[in-house]
Length: 95
Image (tube, rainbow, N blue to C red; front, side, top):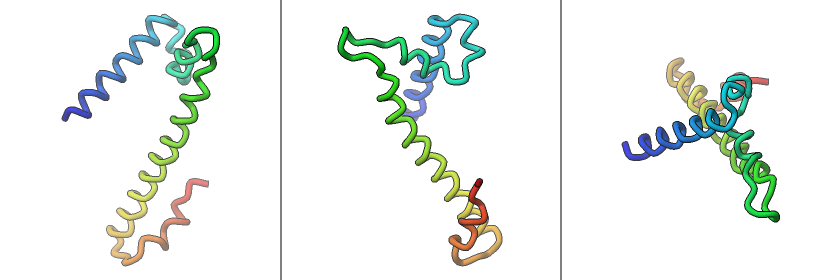
């Protein structure tokens, strides 16, 4: 319950920051949080922190999609009564 509350606060704060920074232009952005991070500069030396965000965000997205794929394959294998889920893993590849 605490993690859910923390995530809710984080998402609300990032949404509010986006709206406060960009106004109505926020609705036209695909990824407003990346645009917010592009504005961050810590002094003259630390700029372009969006590369650090993407270095964390992209592997996290990959892990999330891999987890969804595994859950779909394992669930379908259980639903159809297969003993080995790996036979379905290639067939459910989105490519």
